[in-house]
Length: 384
Ligand SMILES: [Ca+2]
Image (cartoon, protein in one colour):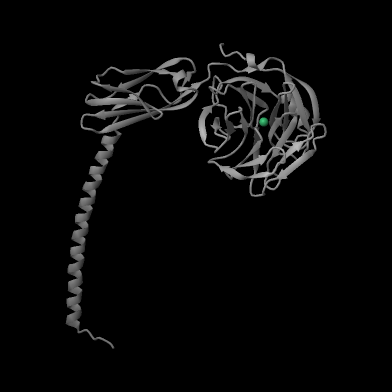
């Protein structure tokens, strides 16, 4: 049905709409005014929040040598401060009250805090309860210049050039090798003389195999990005029903007889409980100058952790208690002799306890080298 509206009615409707628009406009104007006031209040609050109450006197990336102490200085910037606290990591290490204009000092004992990057946070509280935070990172670097450790190549063997080597470890006189690449990942017992597999097991193609280590009768195998550590019977290489899950990437793994030690491509090594893979402690690996990132295949031998550094020809020799790099094997000569035509980077180090030798190879290399160090690694000097 059609409704007919008379002209005068139309006028009325139009008038009503105009009145309504005026009201809306007024409300809108009020809202704008209210919004502006709120914005001003907020801006002022932000301004208050950004006001610096106190600052560290040093800039970013302060480096402190291990076994020494450094003075951390804090400068109060306003008069009415109630207190200043200093936090290192999760620990509050000092609280100052009755603060004047003088700078505040804290003695940072690097040995207590250990090697690596430490988060420092100062929180300054004003008398009205408002706070200001200043944050810095302090790096504790090693106090030791790594020593170049010489070695002699005592033998070389053929290496399977289709092995994208990710893990290499002895159990007694048996050599185990793990490889990567999706669809090509495996664990094998290798015949050293020929480079052929004596026994092997392939990994599901959804996983990219990484390092292996053998503790008691179990082989532990990491995966690169799928967060799984698979367990195998050492004698049969049969996969065990239980596996472990972990966060982040898996690169290399070794063990010290008690803990599994894993790398993830950073400078950090994690010590894990072999029963549940939980992290017991972590260390950060540093030279006297900087963190050593891209730690890859690992080996535990003679009380030290040996680590291939990805994309380099170097193997770092690391003190497990601190993370200090005490020595370096420069394997450039092995790269030129063993890489072959299609080989990739140096990766894979295994210690043979029976004759105190180390076996090294690389991804898709044609050779496996047996080397003997020119000095007793136990005598690496930690008191330079
Ligand atoms: Ca190894």
